[in-house]
Each structure stands twice: as C-alpha cells, then as structure tokens.
Image (cartoon, rainbow, N blue to C red):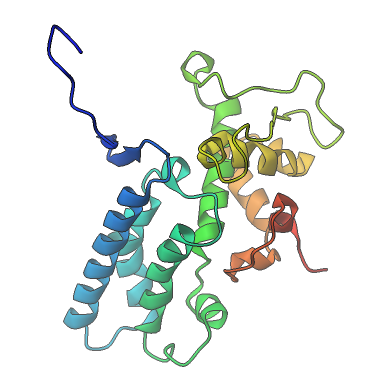
Length: 233
C-alpha cells in the first residue's frame, strides 16, 4: 500500500528498454526481441531478390542483430538451452537466406559470412564491459557486486571475486551479470586484461579466442564454464 491505496502486483517491469521479470529469466523480453528481429529479416528478404554476403552483413548488422545486441549483458540467459537457442535461431535462420548459403551447415555459413555465434558476441561483450569497469567507469557508479579479489592469483592482477549462486545454477542469481562474467574474466591471460585501451583489449581478446570452438559452434551442453576457453592447438 502507498498513501492508503493498494499497489498493483506486476510480474515484469520495463526499464532502459529491457523487460525485467521477477525471476530474471527475461523470457518476455527475449520473445519480443526475437519476434522483432525475425520480422525485420523477413522484410529484408522480401525486398531483396538477391542477397549477396556483403549486402547481407550490412543489413543484418544494422537492422536485425541490433535488437538482440542491445543491453545483452543484462538479459542474455546463462543457460545454453531454451532461450539461448531461441536467440541463436534468429541468426541461424537469417544466414540461410543468403545466396549460396542455404545448403551449408551453420558453422560453415558463419565462416563464409565472416560472422560468429550470438553466444560468442555475448561473452565478448561481457569481457569488454568488465574491462570498462576497471579502466573507464567512475568507481562510484559501479555496482557493489563488482568486487576485486584482495589476493589475486598468478593469472593476472585484475581478478574478481566469484561465488557460487546461493540458489543453485538454475536459480535467479545464476542469471546475473557478475555470476558468469567474473569467472570468465578471471580465466583470461595477463596480456589481454592489461591492455591500455579498449581497442587494444578487443584485438587481444579476439586473438586469444581466435581458435575457440564456441566462436562458430552452438549447442554444446557442458556444465562447467571452462569449456568456454577451450581452444584447438
């Protein structure tokens, strides 16, 4: 109650363009963004009788992918199934519409079109956000959940505190940004996190993850995080 009036009970609320639900699943937000992205991609395919790779990349990045990139560090689901699959399906379907790509496997389409999985873009974006926490953002504006380790490991001096979610790996806390991003950040090598500029950090991160299999493959269901950094020699 407020001022003698009973407040309306709601299950979700929109803020900064993102629909937050009580369980932080962001299902409503994801469904809306996926629907919007698919509808725009369908319109593009109807307008262009021939969709060449270069044309596709420009249109896709400008009008389709932007809907599933916006604030993704906030709402992207931690699970590799369900909602994450729904998001990746936007790009899976879109890449099939490009000429000479319909018969290729998804991995081959990505390499041909010089794209990566949406999941890869998400984790890359998370790392860039963490880098900004250390080098760009005003410390007074950063969440209290962002905590540096008092005694960092030998990996690098920018180690973050990481705790297992108190409500389990399928709980609400597991859907929070720092749960996954902090642990992944801690596994990066020193030469990547010590970059002096954002562009330098991006280049070093891309080089470090250049052979990571999750760059072009989606759907691997391991339970531990270390698989994200597995690379082929």
